[in-house]
Length: 373
Ligand code: SF4
Ligand code: SF4
Image (cartoon, rainbow, N blue to C red; front, side):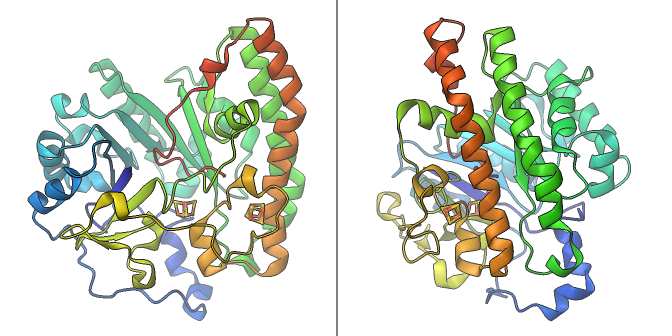
């Protein structure tokens, strides 16, 4: 099981698609979910309780998460040193990577680093100077001997030219990200009236995805390797092997979240949503902690349910979209499905010719990449 460990609620950025939304005038009008207002802002339990809980899971992976988890380098160092886990990952905005001692950094299996594409796109969403600081930190840890997986973790909204952004990160001469994941900002609960989301999806995003799938397969053909572009590699591996999927992010079935008071929930975006708590690290048994993420959702009867997996538990629960917007969001999944199906014969051909192998699609699942985008 993967566990998102919330180390702190604080963050040193206020990105437009994340905390920045709290300052929109329309945010005040929207009624959000019932959140536990007593949840501590910083991790507030004895790590030994967490370790005793983790000892019962022989395949535990910890994803350090926040807020910005590297605001608490003390906890990262403590847990990497003492937690009985097989893997350690961090999902970070990248600004504080230089706070982690090299010996600890080199024990992290995966870094999910938020970066949204070229400098102007990244800085436009996340503040001036962010791109340069993130890139400098990534270059520094690589030159310091880091050999784990580094995933560029993009958030994509209407200001993003998806084709250019992905190709920029893949081919960047300063540092070419070997793994890329992107996530749509599809939480339209507070700002759908102000956004041109549907027209951007139709004009830019959906056609861009088809272009990127073609480029992705072209790279396989040219290099004999399968670029680890998570929104493609994960469902394509399943199409090749005929495997059906539950929620691809793993929420509730392969990926849980441990909150700052030790409560356990299904997803890091559902922090404080008491109605969905699954237990507490003080007395829970990991083998008994899971929920059926498909129960009673609007996905029942969807023809691509086993491809999509239901997309997002948080969205299924909160329904942050008016019906017309839900159709637009689901349309992005249908577009991805069609694009990958169209590419399938060519990919099979490359495998048959020995240019790539099925094993080249192997990748970690549930590692914090919130597939489907
Ligand atoms: S495409 Fe939409 S309705 Fe279908 S499974 Fe995915 S989220 Fe559910
Ligand atoms: S995709 Fe949805 S359910 Fe999955 S981790 Fe993200 S917010 Fe949670």
